[in-house]
Image (tube, rainbow, N blue to C red; front, top):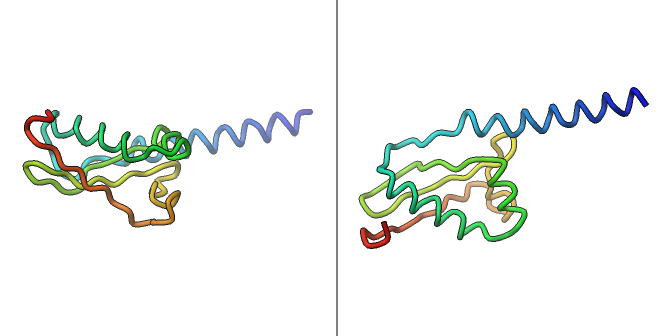
Length: 104
């Protein structure tokens, strides 16, 4: 019984570490205003419509890596900073988002 508890505690600790890594280390590479950031967040939630991707994105984090006045390029990560595109079979996948001033 004691061994099972140790295994469960170890698994929970590994998962917590996996969640903490992207939450603490993934940051936007460029500064954007809040309206473009909100538009990018909404677009990422719409783009990743698969339930597994939504859970992975909830456990991970996205970052903006490039921007223009009306668009942004976004990279998403999941547990242990694994790119979210791996779930779609595209490890280097980046999402481009176009926001017009009327959208935000």
